[in-house]
Structures are given as structure tokens and as C-alpha cells.
Length: 279
Image 1 (spheres, rainbow, N blue to C red):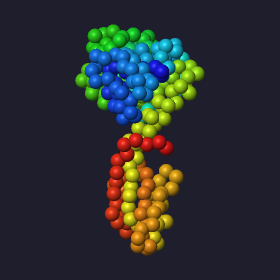
Image 2 (cartoon, rainbow, N blue to C red; image 1 turned 30 degrees about the vertical axis):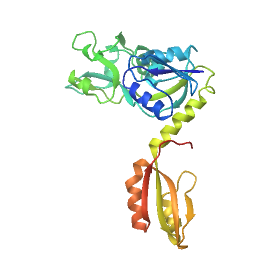
Image 3 (cartoon, rainbow, N blue to C red; image 1 turned 135 degrees about the vertical axis):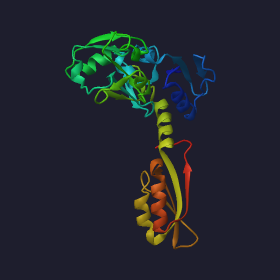
Image 4 (cartoon, one colour; image 1 turned 180 degrees about the vertical axis):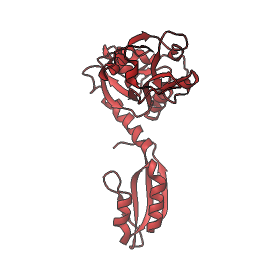
């Protein structure tokens, strides 16, 4: 039975649980539930602190898990990245009191508070900055006003929390992070079935299905508008001058493609969401 770690709280938790549910796995119904066995799919889920997941997976205690790239790198874990799950986007950024223009190099030798000590040291070192790091477990935005640091490095989604503390992001973020499916060293194959299901969810979220009727003489132009994944499916209609076309289209391009097909002369254009997929 595959043992999988899932974030039990934080910005990755709800999204991870939703994705697993869409992939057909049993998921917890109570936020206090920390262990669940999905007998049908032969998966055992452990709901853990996000910062601990890479440690458990890296040591081989658990086979796979979902965690942020920032947490994986900060933990110095031996866990291997299986795939980017494309949700939970955030940035690790250096922030300091606003009111004057600053550059990252201005913080060489300064005190910087962070909950991501290892990762911050590595990222700053790559750009030639050596700083005195103040390790905190949370609420690092208060470190400056309390006088224990000159700046902070923290995960940023909207930046509102930092701004309320009077801090502004300095230059570009140090790194971008998203949720990752990770596995124990050498166990990517064991996580392959889980990955296929999660990839199916990603495809279902990313694409829609277009169905429309098209004059046969315009089929090549219509196919250029909706080329599909391999190629569109074309079926004959009773009227030999018309065909029915079905193709996958990026959901983000839905309205653009609708406009183009209608202008071309396609009729009965229908757009359907995808519940599940395998590509």
C-alpha cells in the first residue's frame, strides 16, 4: 500500500485535498483527521505539517507526498521531485521597511529574519550576499518592528501581510514556488500511478472540449483554429457538405476560439468541461 503525505494545514492543504478528491481518492472530511486508509485505491494518507513532509519522504518513512518547492529545498531533504502540480504558487522574497529605494545588495552583512534559514542562506549566497540570519518559526514580519532584524525573507502570495507591517518587497523575489509531488529516493516508479491520476486532473482543469459543425470546405481552417492534442476528431454528417468536429482546447482560450470559429462559419459550437482525463 502506497504511503502518501498530505499537508494538514496552510495554503497547500485544501488545494491538495481537492486535487486528490478529483483524482478519485478518498479524502478526509474532518480537519482533525490525521490518518486515512483508502482501501479501494490501496493508498494510505498521512496528514502532516507541510514543513515535515519532505523529511518523512526523504528518509523513506513515507513513499510520496505533496509539499511546496520552497519547503523541500529548505529542508535539505533527499526526496526527489516527481512532478510540478501547478498550484499553490508563491514567492520567497526579501522585504524591508518602505519609504526608500533599496537593492538586495544593500543587505549584505545585515540581520535578516526568516523561517526558511537554509534556503535563504543558499539563495542569498548565489547573489553574493552574506547576512546574519535570525531563525523564526513564524510571523517574521514583526521582526523588524521589534528590532531583531533589518529585513525579512518570507513566503509571499499577495504581499498584504508584509505591507500591513510596513514592509516592501526589495527588487525581484528570490524564488518562485509551487506544489510538488515528491517521492522517496528511488521510489518514483511506486508513485507513478498517483502521478497519472494527478496529471489527469491537471489536464481536466486546463482543457475544455469543443464540439461544432463545420462546412467541409472550411475544415482545414477550422482545424487550424482547434488543432486538438494530436488532431481533431472529424465525423461525417448526413449532409455530406458538413462535418462534426471535436477537439481539446485550452480553457484560457475558450472565448477567443469561439469568436474565431463563429466568424469562420462554424455552427452549433458547444463547450464542455472535462471531469477526468488521460493524455
